[in-house]
Length: 597
Image (cartoon, rainbow, N blue to C red):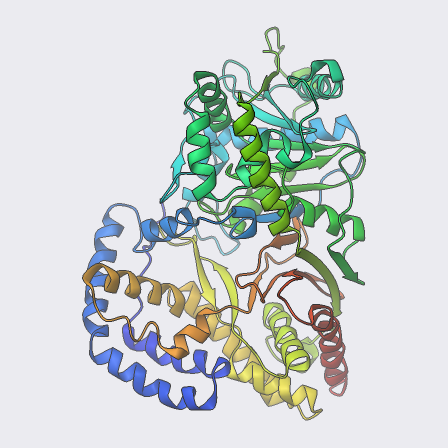
């Protein structure tokens, strides 16, 4: 168990940091007024809210939680809009065998199910980071299965069975979901050959027209079995409650809840490409198409399930659709890395499987009226998701260690985005970057604010060909200071979240928390995230925080940074120009650094 509990930062530290954090994203008049707003809040009611928050944090720590635990999860479960268009993330995976076909599918399923079954059996090894720090394991619980259950007001997390015996997964193919075994009576993984035969049988059955449970083909607008999961909870909750009034449907849902995960299998017919994808020397076009479709198009996942994997039988495509309420990307990355590290036992050493249960198709029992309403709602979702697009670009990078400075690759990647904002829009707006906080008890993420005054100053100077080495050093120092603050639990965003929570509970004045400065800071024009290298997670797709904003996942390579830019074509402006200016920014920094050779 992690011994460190998430501290509440001193109020004075957070208020001091807020000044420089807000400065780049507000007009000069608001920036000049903000110190007075901060001082008044610090005197009252800030001090009282801080005292309540500290007492609450101590109480939560005694129960193995943090001051954020319940409220943070509830903020996810309160989301009423469709999850793929709000909080869910899709990850493209890299580093697995590139062969195609059923053998590859069986190999991956064997690896994935092995790691999931370890969690179901309570045998997952404790994760330790590269510095030797033990990390909190709460988020690994998503590997056991379960489901986020949509309902009016607030969703709830439903746990799976604790038993690993005869554990199953869901195999989704051509819109039909099959319950497929992956474990024996003792909860141990089935041999790869057995898993291959199970998947092969499902595909044969699903492609046989005579095996369809429907009189006619399932309408495309329904997106097969999973269509309901793409609806927001205010719609999906009552409709699911209506479905579960049938004992047959209740049994189907129990199986869905208990599954370790879902695997969506693509063949030639489904491994198609969308239209809302662009690339500028970035990702292969086909992969961007697939990533966009997995993230936003209905039919690829049970969107309320923690994890749905997607695998193509005709390409090396492998990815994850991830429901975000109970875990974060760093945990998914660690789990996938363990899958790749597995030394799979030879088939000859696997136990004989004399009694493997047959796959079973799961089918919703629907009235014609219900099906018609569902079709209409899924059609509305398709229309709402259509503007969501994905763009990829690749910005060059050079070796900056010759400058004699401690250079953070993350600081450089963020600096290029600052430059691109200025070059494209002539101004900068708020930027969010997530930082893993699992070294703390019940830790999730903290928000790093990379848009520092120092970064803006250097980016402007670089645009004007007047940037200096001292200015670049200031950028690196400011970014490093933010990282250190976040890693000790002293970033401003989560602290403000806690103070707001206390104010709402006690009815205190929220004027400071709703002041123009904090409103501007909280409107994240760029929502950014990175897990570092390109393996095992290569690219990310997720909805931007604001309709006109951009969601950006970036990855470092030896010769540059790839930026995958998610946007809404009906709201975002000059996205292609912004992407091009990331390339320009990278080259400008390379050219600037060359003078020091």
